[in-house]
Length: 284
Ligand SMILES: N[C@@H](CCC(=O)N[C@@H](CS)C(=O)NCC(=O)O)C(=O)O
Image (cartoon, rainbow, N blue to C red; front, side, top):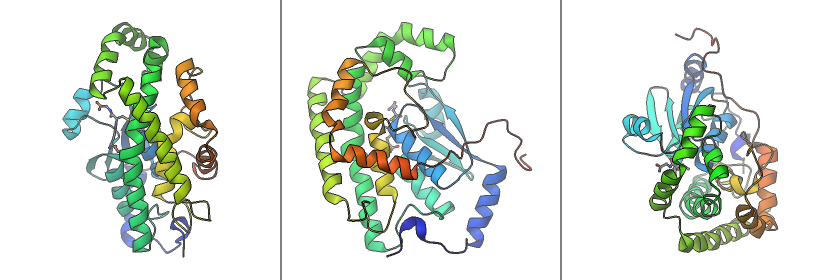
């Protein structure tokens, strides 16, 4: 079978037109820097070489803007080719239609179904649980957590956010149900997801036979806050607090940790981010 990224056909007229439009009107990604669902979309944009501007928001302070743009409260949100799209899975589906090559979806229908089913499993059964377990370990360290959530912003924002952090933390705990029971369940769910990835891996080393697809990308991106591969675009500013390092150590010996690091190493590639004010060709 031909792998997703190896499908090497002439770009269609529509795809060439879309590329030209994107060259003059890059996509805009509204993101949190330190967030695994956002990393999933950054990776898809970079993999497909979609020029895009990244506008980083601070959790909590993002609400007004994101609600106004999408009627929902979560990022990532992508503005691309006249559409405003929320949700990482919907964004990748739209990118796949707009910029089909290199593909993230397998061409064979059964393999495509498998890749999408795995993507959905990781989105629902890994992403929220990993986040809950990790934040349960991070939030008690107010200095670390506040800096983690405001990375990339100015000194005043960081100071104010730190001052309000007890309130932010209480809202986060209530909103994401970050409590002891959630953390215990999170650890179980992370373990189960790692075991499922190991069981699903094909002899090729990918989740779908033939090569790198949306399934590998989603699994590795959602694991990145734990794995912390050097290819991830934003580095954590300081070492993890002890409780989070302990959580990480629980899984660091699992073979899927090394697998995810390898997927990053081989496929994360270079960034297609463009700067907001870069002189793009004929940009109006
Ligand atoms: N299913 C969504 C999940 C996105 C998500 O959970 N986003 C989080 C950041 S990782 C968020 O925006 N949280 C802020 C909030 O809920 O107010 C996707 O795949 O994009």
